[in-house]
Length: 285
Image 1 (cartoon, rainbow, N blue to C red):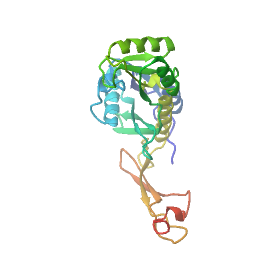
Image 2 (cartoon, rainbow, N blue to C red):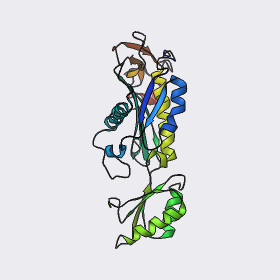
Image 3 (cartoon, rainbow, N blue to C red):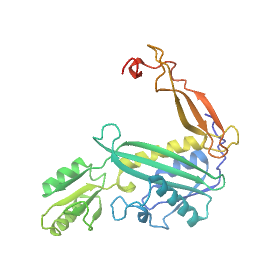
Image 4 (cartoon, rainbow, N blue to C red):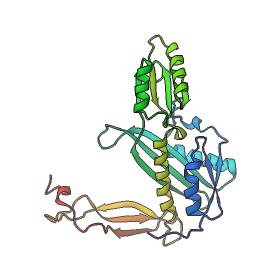
């Protein structure tokens, strides 16, 4: 990897549209590494592009939502660089047993005509449960790591239009619980972790991790045109098996590419010369 000149973005303003406090998570590392100036704006209600409290569904993909936020931020501030953060939640891709969080931090450079993305993913603090009594609520709150992680309550079920959010202390949680119970004949309350960034420290750590990857990519320049974002784009399988010599699906080389001039380089994978037979389809079918 070739480290880009640290002053490529020096002194340039980077628009960041967010209303959930994400600017405080990324400002220090971005400004230190790139010498840029982060310009925060909350001049647009980003919940209109999708809300984790489900008042508004996200109309497109995770990347599309991030791109829209970056474009809006640049339009609001007049900057030609835009930053955006967008998260998603589901089940883990390995066993589908635990909640999973994927974060993308997108960098848009209108002058260079490039987009660079940083990704991070891992276990999420994303629990939900139907509770009927104060004691059940307290047990759920402990499992959900409350009050460090905020909670959201709804009367009856997860799709009820009334939502009690910004619950970050025991007194507010109990008040909301009793109000929610009064709004449903069943007396049941749907409780869940608040997945908005300011309310979920586990998600905050994942946003920071995605930002770190973004910075690495922006500090890697193209050897042909010096544009930041020169990074791994493809892996070439075929690392030979140490036991039988057959070509495995493990990578033997990587393709690195530039987002601006399309320059590519093939690089050997130097971590190992042979594949473990346990990873070989012939030795371990």
